[in-house]
Length: 89
Image (cartoon, rainbow, N blue to C red; front, side, top):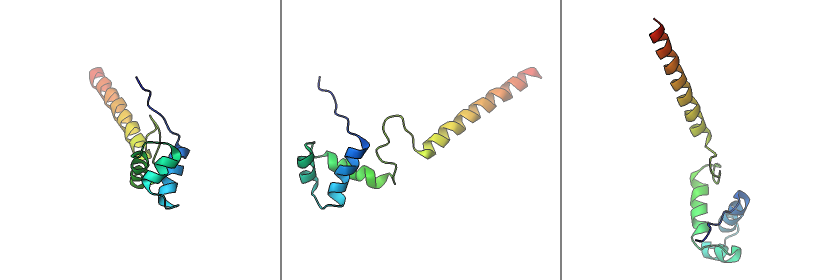
């Protein structure tokens, strides 16, 4: 079974820079970096869509998602405290 290649954030940003800043086509950039021809296009779209949050890596959440996770934890804890108080009365 072939292992999936992992590329660093810097590598992806450099590939996006080739396409957006230096005028390479996506195919030329892929050929010069020795990667699949679809990768630069996907990375360019991700970079444009994520407002500086592109290529976070596995498990790294956006600030909004991190806040939602924290708030859900708070709600769960407060509900448990409320239930304990209800049982005590």
